[in-house]
Picture 1 (cartoon, rainbow, N blue to C red):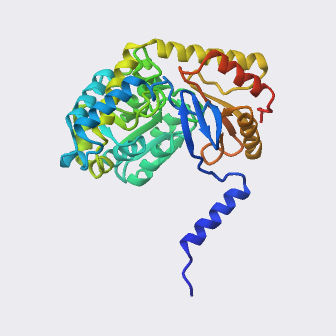
Picture 2 (picture 1 turned 90 degrees about the vertical axis):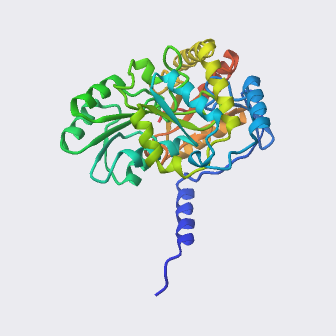
Picture 3 (picture 1 turned 60 degrees about the horizontal axis):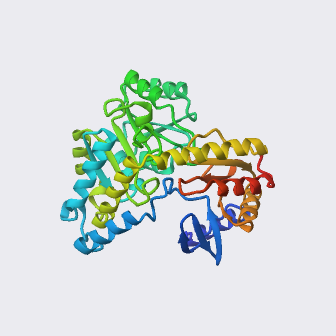
Amino acid sequence: MSRPSLLDRLARACDSRAQSSLLRRMRSVSAVEGMHTVIDGQRLLNFASNDYLGLAQHPALIEAMNLAALRWGVGTSAAHLLGGHREEHSLLEEDLAAWTGRKRALLFSTGYMANLGVMQALVAPRDVCIQDKLNHACLIDGARLAGARLKRYRHVDVGSARRQLAADPSSAALLATDGVFSMDGDIAPLAELSALCREQQATLMVDDAHGFGVLGATGAGSLEEAGLGQDAAPVMMATLGKALGVAGAFVAGSGDLIDGLVQFARTQIYTTAMPPALAAATRVAIRLTREESWRRDTLHHLIRQFREGAAARGIALADSRTPIQPVLIGGNNDALRASAQLEAAGFFVPPIRPPSVPENSARLRITLSAAHEESQIEQLLDVLAGIKTTP
């Protein structure tokens, strides 16, 4: 009896995706010029970037990174606990804690690693983890890898979350949610979820990857906008590679939380620390985000312009007031066709298809940046108006 081949099985799975118009392919970018990107020799206006505040190419960030690289070198060559934690990391963690109103913060190499590490440290197989059905994959994977009993509640439905928690009143419970949902752009009912967690004695964890830098009076994110401090939302995670334009992630909360993560978050303990030069650039991004509120003002102005222009042209949008503006298509082939039409017209908007989104909800995930111009928004809307965009 022959043993099945794992590589053959993987190849068959890829073939199946191709037949369903779900096969992904990598495309190399040969140049970036502001909000334009060059792919396959074509200069395209990028409406797929998470660079919400237009900071990724800011001269001050580039200068800070270059100067820090001259001092510290390119890489740390060690994990944080083994000599990789440099002064720049400590200063960045202090800045992040102060900005978010938390006692302390801890850096991770990526948001995915941060969520996996938090789950590993907090929950055990006997615990229950309640999550929104549209949470990012890393929250779902984190609960599964930690061995928790994962239960999913209806999207942004606090009543559904309450029923899930009430059904298991004796187990330790973590309720985890995105702050801003990455494929829909809507915002979780954080104040209501926080109240529910107090009522049910559960711990609230918020992944604010897409709200951090964008929402709130100072840009500290969806928790700031909701008025939720450390006690009301004990575990906050956010990434640095979206609105701040750099890379990496952090978790912020109490001293006990951070001490526990240093001991038990395997994805932080057993990986090389981020380059100190990157941490130095991130500190500049934080300063600019906090001081230059016009970036958020411009972004939200462009969001309103896009939504009003879409409504005037009969373009159906999902309900979102964030930079993520999904145009629902439905079928996979239709989404591929719409994306190709946009590319032919000079716009880069890749199609989003299952399993990144539910079946029959393929879409164009348009993302806006403060670096876009009003005229560019109007050009995109004019092209979209000529494309079938309703399921």
